[in-house]
Image 1: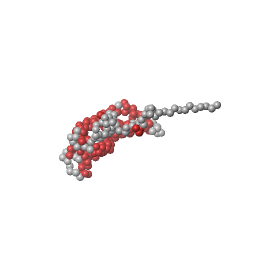
Image 2: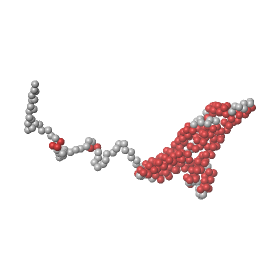
Image 3: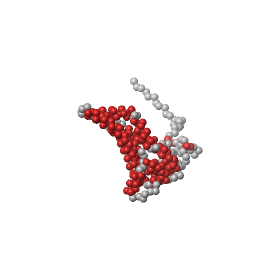
Image 4: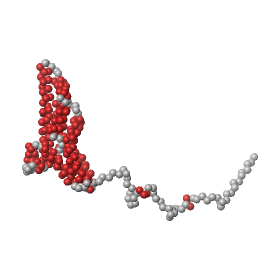
Amino acid sequence: MMQTQTPIPFMDRSNALAIPTPLDMPTQLPESSSFQPRNSASIPSGSAPSDPNELRITGLGGGSPQWTIVILLTFLTLIPSILICMTPFARLLIVFHFLRQALGLQTTPSNQTLIGLSVIMTFFLMQPIGVTIYNDSVVPLQEGKITALDAVAKAGIPMRQFMSHYVREKDVALFLEMAKEPRPSSIDDVSFRVLLPAYILSELKAGFQIGAVLFLPFLVVDMVVASITTSVGMMQLPPVVISTPLKLLLFLMVDGWHLLIGALMRSFN
């Protein structure tokens, strides 16, 4: 049985809807409409938008940022030397190490604990001098009233006064002779080239003096324990096994940390 196909009616193109093609669209915007970016009012004309995460370093006292970075990096590298040679840190650390050896303890307190305690005590002693340096040199430098070299010179005045108070005349005379500099009329005329090594030498001597005095009572305990153990015939028993607990008990009974820290702080009064 043969099927008949229904013919598709012919669509009159004149009556069809006109669908625009991309080629028929206008390529230019009308003159009445203008394109404006979003939030265009917040972007100033003639300048690039600023990044909120941008890091900008301004120079101290109106100087260039490059020299500011150089000065800050140099100061960071000199912090350990400044901490050791221009503060009481060396004396405090030496005394604490002597105390540990006198008690017969090898690793208690640890080196990190002793260094941290010395740093805290140094900050406590140097805090008034740090405030003076900040007010006399850092604040005027930030306000642009003085230059960086003037700020360094002003910061050296309080440090000179502090070191001159604890330096020994004998040590100053030694380095004056070695430097072949004329004898100054007062300690304020001594140059930093002479004052710095004289001060650290005086601090080493003071630290060893305090440590030697600190050793004496514990040395007496060691001698008494050693003589007793020898007299009773306990030759195989090391005296340290008995003397160490006795020294710790003596140190705790007299509140040794309180007495030691108080004496050290008063030595810088």
